[in-house]
Amino acid sequence: MSREVAIALWIVFALVILALMTIAWRRRLRRDSALSAPLGVPEHAEVVDRHEVLYVSTTRHDEPLERLTISPLAYRARGEAAVTDRGLALCLDGAPTVFLASSRLVGVDRATVTIDRVVEPGGLVRVAWNADDDTIVDSYLRVADGDPKTFISELQRLVPAAPDTGATS
Image (tube, rainbow, N blue to C red; front, top):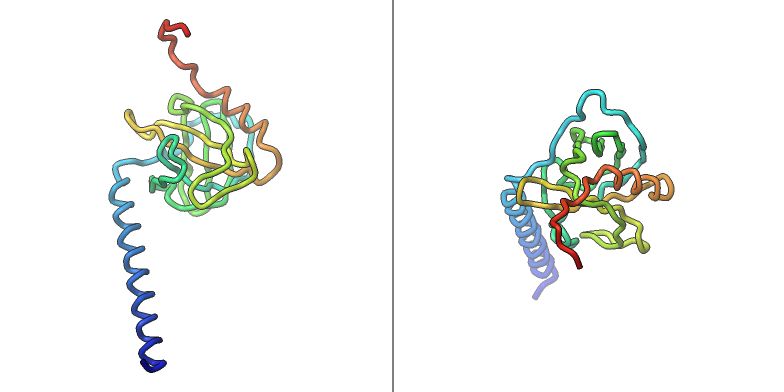
């Protein structure tokens, strides 16, 4: 086999791989098109806490390696997270502001692993929220300006208490 044939085969192989990656990403976009993040901050929302963040990903709840392509949270971005008295506003570069009202929030805690990112223990903030009536998702943020303790505690105050079912353990 000549050198030119070998190079041509490698180029064809690379193009096939790129085509398969494109097809897989488009299939994922179609699969998740029914889900969307709520946009726009309500009037008179008072900012309680604000941090620079790196938005990492949104995944299925408790499945940190199963990425969801919820618009406009499909891609990693830098931006700002603002905790308001009514919820969490994510102002990400190049995307409209996503607002997770406190009624949508399910939980807030720390995480170490999500798709495409492994950090020091507890280095990510995981925000669990309702994308629709039946679907809980987890969005992962990395606080860029210091320790996220205050950010997490302010967010946890917004999470509605779980309804009392009367069950005892």
